[in-house]
Length: 82
Image 1 (spheres, rainbow, N blue to C red):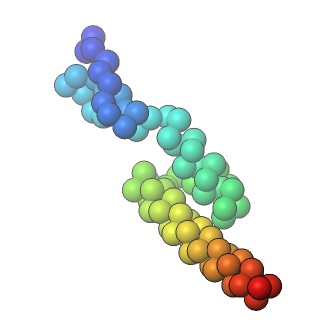
Image 2 (image 1 turned 135 degrees about the horizontal axis):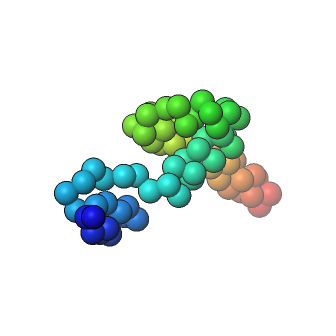
């Protein structure tokens, strides 16, 4: 039986075997996408790893833009109070 080895970034693999994506990361991706887009977990789990990662990145960009817009709006409101 091949030895289980740790790889940086939280992944594990068997020496000489195929690398596997950590199960906890899959749950994180599914929860993140389902929370933001309200898609059923079956649909998200049916996606390829690459597609899930792409949607996670898209959601992250949407959140960053919205946070920046909110920050500008708040900053502007405080300037108007002066």
